[in-house]
Length: 175
Image (cartoon, rainbow, N blue to C red; front, side, top):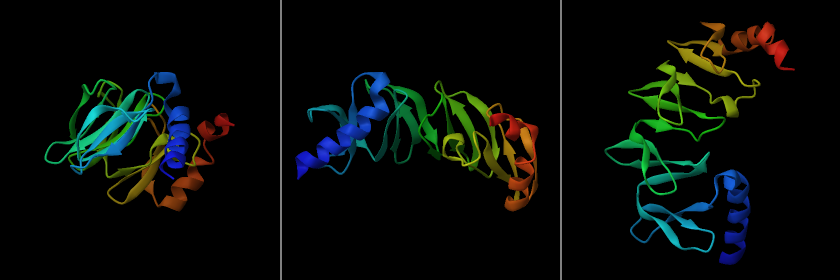
């Protein structure tokens, strides 16, 4: 049974990490901490994190309680400091992150590419809105593009913001 599960996980992570070389998979150790093993089960990154996400674009989100979320590379070097309330995995060089209760987007070096000013945002890759992110601030909703430009201003209900997005030139040009 363990072999079947390992093979299935390898297939998923191989597809996810192929372009970044060595495949590393999250694994929980006997000490209840998380680390990463390679495709043969060898421990590569020690069991020292409270929670981890798989590698995406060569980086893995990790958290140590009391420090916060950040990103490591496959050598277990901290690339983006463990200081965020929450992070998502990288897609197309950027990820959603929350810092001090506000949400924005960072690049693979940790630079804020869209400022931390929203109460909530949807990651571009997870959004059903073709590369736009629905954002909210003070109970109002709108949409931004990947440059942070408001395509639909932050002044609508969710339904109205969605209808407005579908009427924009930016939406029609995605096609």
